[in-house]
Length: 320
Length: 263
Ligand SMILES: Cc1cc2nc3c(=O)[nH]c(=O)nc-3n(C[C@H](O)[C@H](O)[C@H](O)COP(=O)(O)OP(=O)(O)OC[C@H]3O[C@@H](n4cnc5c(N)ncnc54)[C@H](O)[C@@H]3O)c2cc1C
Image (cartoon, rainbow over all chains, first blue to last red; front, side, top):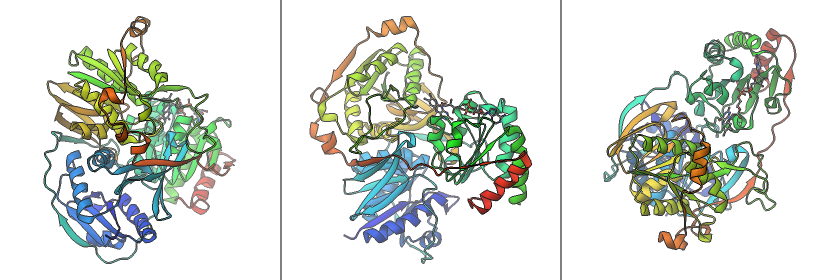
């Protein structure tokens, strides 16, 4: 049987998410190196044109319930057997984090989560993933016939193939006996911005903001002017300046933006753990000895309450 | 209802990680181990369920060597009743699925109906074992939960959802719930409770006691293998911008656009 790579594409309002297109871009490179074909799967209706233009030749449109763990597990299992895929890629979203370990145990397929790189070496896929909160990197191989990988958003550049619309194959997996968990209500996040884990730009504030009022008056407007998602250190979260969902770091969210601006954050090892892979790090801190400066691409030694408004003006001008 | 808490010790979060000469693991000689921070939320949640008279007993399950017992005692001091430590040379080198198999066998033997885990262990950062246990036992699951209530045979949980949202889910026990920051504030153990915890039982079980085929766990059965560890590449030295606020702000935005090309 010929080899097939299957990309689990999450959708939003019917369109594939950016993280899915990233994975197809990477999947194409892996498929070429493995001599494999590249397929996509969606739960629900497929946007065959977009998926095709990123290199999927076939898309498996699976009927199922993307809002339940069991629905996702059954749907991916259905697409894996319909496609005969031996490599399955998914973005490390809340949904995949929840469902893929369960799928792994169900079908006996090795799972490697939160990969930041995938490459082919001697005909085998080698995944690289951060461990110990990014303080080390592990190269990981899978020994089962089917291998499952989830990858961190923003790990791979987008590149369209300009391919034709993918052929659509409908899959209706038999409903499993399943478990009893039901979705009752979706609680939308407080801000209307992109979630930290997927954000390309982040502006974070620390303990130095001193109050929720100042956090709201300084960090959030600067973030808005840079079209960034606001984030916070644990010290700021525990003091109530920002919500738990805003925390970056070892016990918060691991982020991977192209631009990370840290305002009055010291750069504790547990904070660095969450943002060290950011492409460009900017630190504003009045203490020239603050550890964050050792990781900053650009450093400003100054009072953040003076720099932030000036920066906000510049971003407003630059990003008209 | 018996509540089980899966608890692991991990290197303290401020540990500087060093890789061993062979590139196969980390140097652990001078590493200080702590309870996985997320597991502390699980212990606290279990203790609160007991105080609310919803849990009849709280049992800690730890896959690990004798060195982990100080972390188990700490959980017993915070309110758990007893512990089962899972230890066998055959367990060494297990991948997430192998670990889940061992824990699932132990949980089943104790007739646990609510399993609380941390959302991830901050060493492997895999966040996989809870959902794997749920599948192996045929239990319901809720992942990365920051609000939990249990009533009779049912639970309600706020779990992490896409794009930073949260979802309220309900289900019937038995279930596995993985606990996120925000669920509660773990208590400190009082001195009398620390003393009392010394007398609480810790039972050690091996593969035979759990009825596990040694060939189904450990390095030989691992589907996922770490072949090499490396340290992350250092970041190139940065640049400190000089001048008053307006000057550095203008220079920074220009550098971000023209040099770093990120805006
Ligand atoms: C188990 C564990 C898990 C943890 N997980 C996390 C985590 O996930 N995320 C996290 O962030 N932390 C985490 N921490 C906490 C971490 O160790 C630090 O305490 C925390 O990151 C410090 O936050 P901070 O930088 O805002 O505060 P501080 O360390 O107090 O730093 C404040 C900084 O602001 C600067 N400053 C003050 N005023 C101004 C001003 N006006 N202008 C400019 N600069 C100013 C100061 O020079 C200082 O550098 C964890 C700790 C533990 C033990």
